[in-house]
Image 1: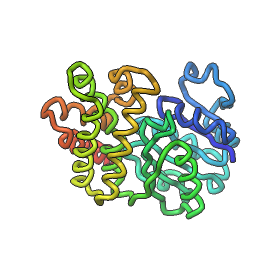
Image 2: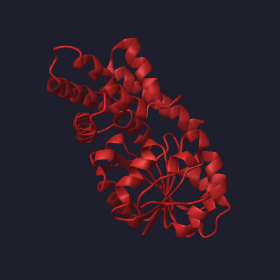
Image 3: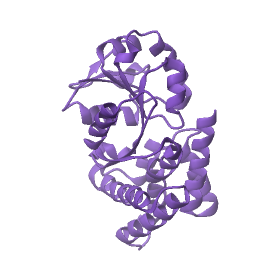
Image 4: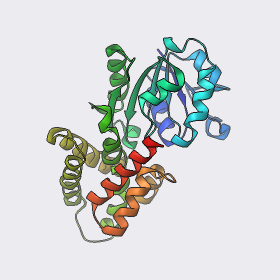
Length: 274
């Protein structure tokens, strides 16, 4: 199986680095400086070339760049033979199908803990994707952590809870580390509150516990394994106009993690509608 990844930012590069030991991985990014020196990863010269070389294409570009990428993909041949996996916030499978035709699409919302094989990824299936496609996508992301199948109407909530959740964790723990508070106690409190936020966002209790506990535990491990300061980890997942930034603004204004999740979900819904 040949995996092509369009977009080599923080998430695209993390996926490529994790999958290269198990699959043949091809990547393309319009910013050539991101793909200058790579080991065991093949760099394509164009999206068209990547399409020709890949069986599965992971779309790891920002929502604002998505339409331009779809236009280039549309000009490729044999699209019906390929599986498309989108990790872009707010982009529905039906939108991709509208632009590309009856293609097989699985939508995934992973979080940054895939970098250390502790990622929490939510998956939903498009109209034309098969059960085999769904199982293969699960296999890919199980290799990078844990997965949860959800209805696509819950994907914006997943984006807010487990996708943006690490940003909230790292923001809050910055002050925790500067005080006498116990980080382990903070993690427990964070998981309890994030579970409540997930339930209020529409998840069943078991789903909410899975997402919250996995996110909190993974964030703690990211700090230990990467040895990066919380501010740097937060920066890596906070993009201009994105869901994490919207949640952080609410967190700073109210001091409430639940309000942060609500704001992130609202922003995810806005991106989906636009």
